[in-house]
Image 1 (cartoon, rainbow, N blue to C red):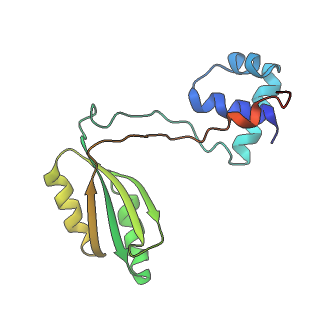
Image 2 (image 1 turned 60 degrees about the vertical axis):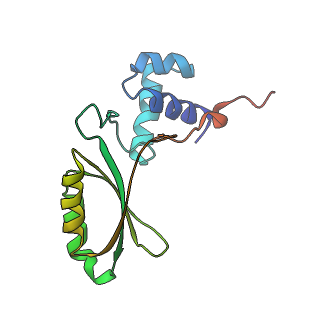
Amino acid sequence: MDKIDYKLISLLQKNGRAPLKQLAEAVYLSSPATAARIERLEKEEIITGYTACINHKKLGYPIVAFVNLELQPAQKPTFYPFICNHPNVLECNCVTGHYSMMIKVAFQSTEMLDTFIGQMGQFGITETQIVFSTAVDRQNIDVSKFCEDDED
């Protein structure tokens, strides 16, 4: 990874749909050289995909919550397929502490969230926090410091 790779990552995090020509101009490379770098970053799984950021409220899912689950290891073979296939699950993280899973979900109503929490009861004890507001909602890591010149 060099400064050009970090610059490309930074640019693509800001706009995953940026035209190749625009990216090439920003990193002072030809379009084929830029495309080759992006392809390498994808192959090395540094860039894992391109996606649209969605406003859940405007899509009709105003209830965002974190559900903590105390999951026994023996439950994982049945839990993982359930959680991976649930359409309202945004994230599921295996974490340290009293609870072993932290699950971020979005629902259309508190009643639907309650139904989900009821389904989670088959896997273990839950604790739920409903999000009132979000002060920071970053999806990316700021890599711009790696693409600056050292001449300052």
